[in-house]
Length: 581
Image (cartoon, rainbow, N blue to C red; front, side):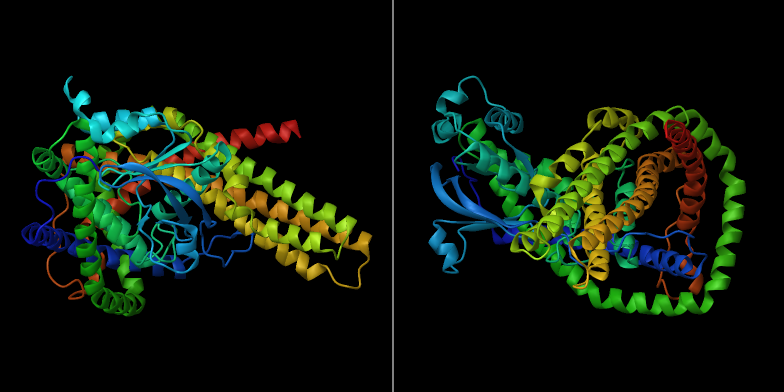
């Protein structure tokens, strides 16, 4: 749109990119294999070890996370030169956006004019903010703007804009026809971006990464962090948002981005904003080639991964007692060796900031959980009201359906999602000295948690109501039974909320501090563990790497600090609540 690359993605460039993808996989897959072994050991030892006395109280929903499908007319900036043209857009349940020339083309099953998975995109609703972003990507000289005829169309004021931008994907510019339509699309698109980022879509191949506790998914996330640490990225960030192929593609694109952008801009004609958009189109073509290569490489690795997981499970289950004894022995030796260095680092760097960070994390989590509780109560009360009025009417059936859809309704859940954004800037400032740049992941995690908890509560309420409501009950008896169900669900919700509050805050405090502490100790004490060579199954003990033992010991010491702080803060709050009651 506007300026164009002087040389499109040719065969030589594609071959070069494939070589770079192959090189990344040669470095990454050994990390992945080692982490598969560690994850399998962790999974089996937890499975066979002592269980927590109190599990989840709410029933787990069997429904997969999804976006509520949305469709309607929008105006799309497209063509050469770019012009605002009418389009019919469809937001799919798996977080993909498609657009057609007309609604009739969609209804007749025609192929869309274009489509994109919304992984990694950011939504802007300010035209001025989007133009500033283009100027930052490709600053113009004072005379350039006068020459920028192809993008004059973007400088003309537009109503109700929706700009989808990405660090290395093509930009998508839409306009809605009213403020209400813009809001509906904004909520839907934001939900789709979050769904794709948390790896929750059924269509995303390669494990539900952020939600899954399966050994393969946990191993993949650990391998990405290890891969990044060995390439000099010490802090936590948003590097693990998306499916496995999307995560690896984004990792390589970040490495290549400076050189690619410089090369593209040298070969582009035109002025600043037009060149910036054309550069985004060029990077989009590069990303498509990288994603195809990464997907192909991971598919090729799948049979080996399956065989490795099966062999690891057999070996670990057979020798678990010996392996755990060896791990405990190694941990004691390692702790004696590094205890003083770890304590010194924590006392000097972590302890002064831990109370502030704990409070800053707890605040949005508690506000989010309270918003979920309020919305749940409103939904249950509404159902009880209609049951008293007409227990067998069609209106009640519609109310039951709408109650069941609450977790997937972006308008209703917006109040909960908004609370997850609370203190975002303050928390980012507190975490920045530790190299943590993963605020998007943290916010998405809190929003995802709100949706999961609401879905579990809704499922539990409907299951219990179905069990206790029978045709033998009259209207008042049915209402009385439903009130009992309401009270029981709230008790279960309170229990799960307290567990969720603890685990979410604990996990993210560990995510903020752990990479920093590891890098500090590596620089001060030369704790960089040796590489593990050879077939991981050659010896059973290779599920116990030096790296893994160091990690377990350091995280164990750090978690003692975090748990103590959480007990102090939450204990004080619980005592205050008891006094108020």
